[in-house]
Length: 203
Image 1: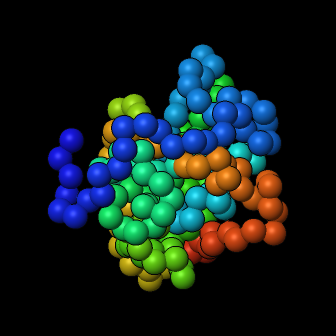
Image 2: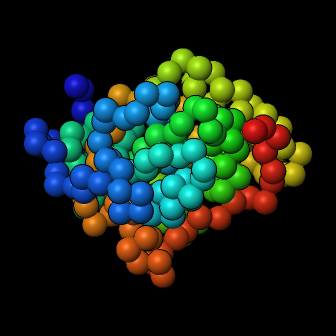
């Protein structure tokens, strides 16, 4: 793996995390049930993002973590330094028979501002950038098409250009256990999710 200049070296051993989902009791780790797909999404601070998706019918498992960068097995503090290349992300495991990828993408686009670059609201840094990390070719095509469709809506509303990264997932690293399903453990905790108010014409 080639690290960008100044990237933290990370570690060979995964950091300690939860084994089961605090809300559903399902395993956070693969293998997942047959008929399920996985997509990894970044929309700013992962606490609110994870709650947003675990509440959707058909989403079986969610997990907070780091992806899209270079440092192996980063800690939260390392990711927050901006020197890992990773974004705060949520791994979403969904049942294809119950929820469509279009519904997931519509939820993604409408619940944050994908035009802000390396920030979401008051959360500033590359770790808060907007990302879609795909695990299948079909996901990648659908993500690109949904971005184009939403850009038309945003432009019509006088908003800026989408900065969301769309690329294949290389590796998802689980965040520390205390971050998993954080807003189920502390319902009054911080959630920075805020959409643009523009609706997405998919799903």
